[in-house]
Amino acid sequence: MDVSTEYRTRLAGRQADWERENRRYVKLGNLRLAAGVLIVVAAWLAFGQRWITPGWVAAPAGALAWLVFVQGGVAALRQAAARAAAFYSRGLARLENRWQSGGEGGAEFLKEGHVYAADLDLFGPGSLFELLNTTRTRGGAAKLASWLLAPAAEEEARERQRAAAELRPRLDLREQMALLGQDIRSSVDPEHLLTWVGRPPVRLPKWTRAAAYALGGATVASLGAFLAGWVRLAPFLALLLMELGWALPLWPRVREVLEAMEAPARDLGLLSELLRKIEDETAGSAALQMVRRKVETEDVAASARIARLRRLVARLDWARNQLFAPVAALLLWHVHLAAAIERWRKESAGAVEGWLEASAEFEALGALAGYGFENPDHCLPELRQGAPMLEASGLAHPLLEAAKAMDNDIRLGEGARLLVVSGSNMSGKSTLLRAIGLNAVLAWAGAPVRARRLVTTPLQVGASIRVVDSLQDGRSRFYAEITRLKQLADLAAAGKPLLFLIDELLSGTNSHDRRIGAEAVLRSLMARRAIGVVTTHDLALAAIAEALGAEARNVHFEDELVGGELHFDYRLREGVVKRSNALDLMRSLGLVDQAPGG
Image (cartoon, rainbow, N blue to C red; front, side, top):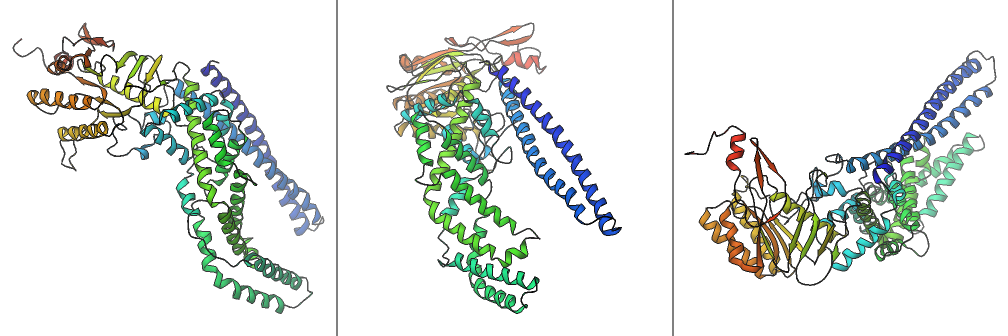
């Protein structure tokens, strides 16, 4: 399947669906207007002129009610078509590299001091998270972010690969999930629901609902009998006083139940529909089977239970209607609902965490599957045990468009555990570091990687690429860098093999100290089984690879000055770079005419 062609075909179909439903919606709106006019005319003729009987008003009124109902259904179809079209439009934007800043960047998941998130553009506009994230709920987004922030165990990463591969061709399923709920983006927050179900129980008497039914029914019946002229007002007033005397002592507990329900009540419909999708799916991979087991119940399905809670919340909203509010008060409506909600919480509290976890995992796996579907040229990495290593052929930066994402072969581990990359400014050194880091993150999240082939052992990524000074904290850039290097050293000492990526190592100090300090840092990291890549434009640091012997290799990027303009091919070559382009860049901007003394 050509993904771009499939998306364009489906987009055209969904846009045609929207246009058809929009025409129906407009026609029904015109008919509603006509029915409204007929109601006014019939009412004037019946009650103003008395030319016709009032029964004539019923026909246009019934027609209006029917038109309102039908138009509501058409509006839902129109909205679904619009959202389906938006789903494929966003997909095409990703395929055509127009996706940056058009989605959720997940900046709230960026943890200060994380050892690679900011350096590798994991979150924020134009980030890896924005490219991957197609989740509908905050729980799903948080799960996807957690997979990017920490490498999975080997078998867990393999299971995610299998599950995502199983879901990859399920384009219809991903479209259906995009249509769930009322809005394009959802604020379903698992913390609200988990906090609510974990609250201490609000104790209401066991006979609360029975008493509410009896008192409310009797009070409404007595009012009806009075209005019909069958009894006097006294029975109704007596029952009303009994209601007040019984309900007022309960009210603080009733209010506590209902107020606590406000936050978790949001988007229960989306959660119910998402759980129903999981229940309806056949699961072949172990990861998807585990997701299914988390939503399985002995009697009522998880989706049905959440739907029941949603209906209770909807009935609570009825009581806010000005017409129904007086009736709700007489029926002790709030007492009924408080008792029903507390009963739901008692019966289902223990299962809610599993349901939320299952929905979050299903959405995150769907995001990985969608990424694989849209990038058929990416490969699934081979995850293996053994001495720390990462080998890749045709590895490229996953956030760059194809025309700019030059690929290179990388070999870390057997033969050389350190690459020292030299090269002039803008030659591609930092981009190479990010390409290696992002693909390692994708590999251990269970996702495809942008390479023809990638083999890796379990690795913890650590990066020092975007360290900056801080005026507020009183930190220089050099202090920020050595603080990050200390983090990397601590990670290496913790036991899990480290993949370190360091840009312009110790560039904030003098050449003498830099040369000695850089070699000491690298020797320390490598002594702790770490592998990695460092970049430099200081050719003195390239001598470190020679000092470390067979454990390290010098590689470089080149540039070429043609007609006064610099050209880069971004191809990694063996050895140390032979020239610098700093003066050439300054000349191109008109800062200098020639080299000093030239």
